[in-house]
Image (cartoon, rainbow, N blue to C red; front, side):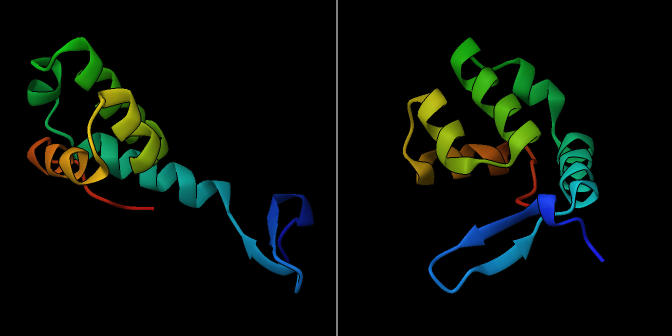
Length: 87
């Protein structure tokens, strides 16, 4: 049984979605391993920071805001950087 402290509650129906920290870390490791670090390091500081943020969090929206790009533009950049979309 999962620890109820690790559950998020959504809506009036109290639908619970459990987020396992091991799953979050596994997704982060996959993004780190598959990323094209040479490509990432050649980017401007703002884009580099956004790509690194995405690798660590998987948050496409916030990463796109950091980069100053639309979500669609950042998603194309993510693909060029070889970062998979895993969550």
